[in-house]
Amino acid sequence: MADIDGLKDTKNFHPEIPTAHDGFYLKGAHQLDWGMRNRLSRIFRPSTGRTVMLAIDHGYFLGPTTGLERIDLNIVPLLSYADALMCTRGILRSTIPSTFGNGVVMRSSGGPSTLKELSNELIAVDIDDAVRMNVSAMAVQVYIGGEFETQSVKNMTTLVDMGLRYGVPTMGVTAVGKDLTRDARYLGLATRICAELGAQVVKTYYCPEGFESVTAGCPVPIVMAGGKKLPEIDALTMAYNAVTQGAAGVDMGRNIFQSESPAAMIQAVGKVVHELMPPAQALDFYLTLKREHEAAAAKK
Ligand code: R5P
Image (cartoon, rainbow, N blue to C red; front, side, top):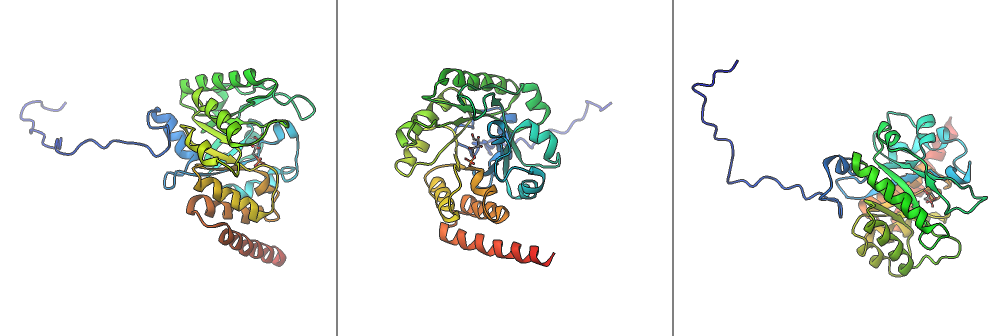
């Protein structure tokens, strides 16, 4: 046992140096617990504060959509380019290698298929399983203006409560029904409701007019959803506009996995998101990588 006599006076308190204050780099997250911030750091790259999240959760209501027929063959090779992966727990357990070390955002709501009213969702995951799978966040669809608006908001607030108990963030996903306009007024309303009711991250669509007001009015990070497949230059331009107008990255699916060259496309999106590479240059980057991949494939 250490002798308590003759201890040296310690001099290493450095009272002249203020204790470092970790302001944290993500909007609205500086007062969250350590575990939650750590999980957010697995989604949003600390060096840029932005993310390239690859969304492959479409099967939870769409089944095996184009590009997602064989996730083992088509998606697993892309994982090294993604800061985070958004998927269901079924795909995570069955197909995604457990060596994947970046963020996992687990789809945590579900119920109806495309054959039914989509807004009639319920929570589809227990927090115990989210923690067991070490996910970085849970994602829940929120149908503002939809038939089951209140039920979907309740799904989100329940997940937020469960997530706060265990340090798991919740991402509110603003789902736009057929009859709703994706303009700044609507997206501003939907994103703000998600944040006000506790979501630590919000995913929403881009709108060409007034997107800055949507991001500025939301006190937590917004990630941009990709939407239907566009020509590569248009998808890269949309991603560029979103991040230069305040989005903390993208959560893109079809515009990556339905691209002619998904590996080239996700890397080009990464250049836009993390380096703010202008769209025309990012398209050149995409085309160069695509040619290289094609040449390598032809040699096999
Ligand atoms: C749809 O509800 C899913 O949550 C997708 O994750 C989302 O739509 C993003 O994928 P995409 O870029 O294909 O629209």
